[in-house]
Amino acid sequence: MFALSTPWWELPARAAMVYAVLLVLMRLSGKRTVGQFTPFDLLVVMLLSESVSAGLNGAEDSVTGGLLAAATLIGLNVLVATVTARHAWLQALAEGAPVLIGRDGRFFEPVLRRQHVPRRDVERALREADCDLKDMKYAFLEADGGISVLKASAGAVKQEGEGE
Image: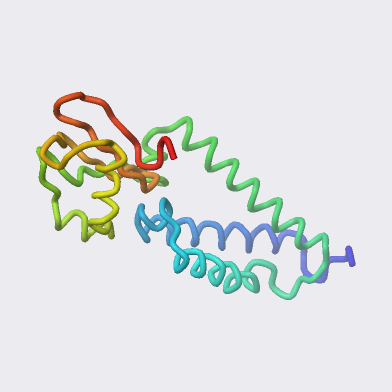
């Protein structure tokens, strides 16, 4: 139950490789993938977890092996969070930066398509900001996938999801 069937160092190495590849893949998949989970997105995450489990632990079935892999993943997550909190350029690389998706009452359709943002999500963000399209000064797709709207008249910012 506790005896490892593989060398102890192999599990952290596997966990680090899987973590790095998944981090890159999630980053490449776009902001809305991370920020707004649909039932389809949840299914993809569950299947992704299942698909990498064998690569994560190899043939290791022991409790010790599972805990070693889990500790490595948590440690890597803490390390990435610590490093990105101290270095803005690494945070921008790992998490991305806000993207301007609209200005002065118009949305940039090519940008919305490129960022995989449905028009209805932008319209919902306008409603939540209590902002008519003609009153919108700026709209941003934030790094976390939320949409921020800045009104031209009031100058107040409302983040999608606030006040729900």
